[in-house]
Length: 284
Ligand SMILES: CCCCCCCCCCCC/C=C/CC(=O)SCCNC(=O)CCNC(=O)[C@H](O)C(C)(C)COP(=O)(O)OP(=O)(O)OC[C@H]1O[C@@H](n2cnc3c(N)ncnc32)[C@H](O)[C@@H]1OP(=O)(O)O
Image (tube, rainbow, N blue to C red; front, top):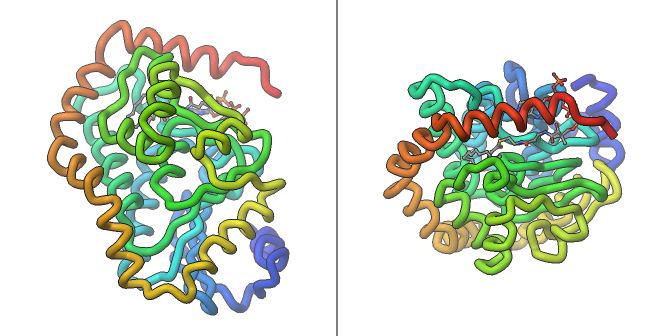
């Protein structure tokens, strides 16, 4: 991200550039900055054009989370440098005509990222600056609070593509919006607009634009300033334990099962068609 863009991002919220420090400078798909005053980390995805979760972005997110845990950061805002898209989900190129070992490694790295983000000790907010389909929705659900820019879309279209989602994703959705809403949403592979997402509780607030999304995310984190981090972290882990333990127990079997489904000719055909439609659809 250019210095100008940084300056506008922080000055818009009365934080001087001097109050921030770049946490890592050698990441290709992320900008990670920490506000020295309050210890909040800004993790901004910057993998053009639409933050597709390729192996590099997933690995950098994972590395960053490990380092933030070690650095005792006080909170994290996960966002995107792009105004229209938060994250376009998993890289469909990884799912098309895949080699079994490669695709297994890919899903297992994503699964580890989900556990890491969902189980992080510090508070997390997703400032979703735009569309958040599938894997983008999953990243958001792993955070404790979600702010999404108006006129965006969010959801997981797995069923529409003939793919049953792994159990940990279904559990994550159920714990976010309740069993009934999760059933309706996931069995239909439904994508919601911002208002619908707010109504079912998939997001917590709507933002007018990117700056507003970041400001609302900061306001959420501010509420924790007077709360003891240890007590907060332990409570979060207790609440989140069942999903994390379930992934640890059943994640490997889920993965095997899921990979064999992805390799089925009929699923590959659907994915191929999906990709074709994506490349050839009318842009708005
Ligand atoms: C969907 C279920 C699959 C099941 C897999 C299960 C995995 C299990 C574990 C995880 C569970 C959670 C599920 C995750 C699954 C996924 O994440 S699969 C990916 C699903 N994502 C999508 O369907 C999003 C598709 N993209 C869009 O709808 C749009 O791109 C956008 C709304 C995000 C942005 O629109 P716009 O700004 O108009 O950009 P585009 O011109 O469409 O895109 C630019 C460019 O990027 C390519 N692209 C977009 N998304 C992806 C992607 N996910 N993978 C690969 N490539 C992608 C797009 O084709 C364009 O390329 P060209 O410029 O045409 O070459």
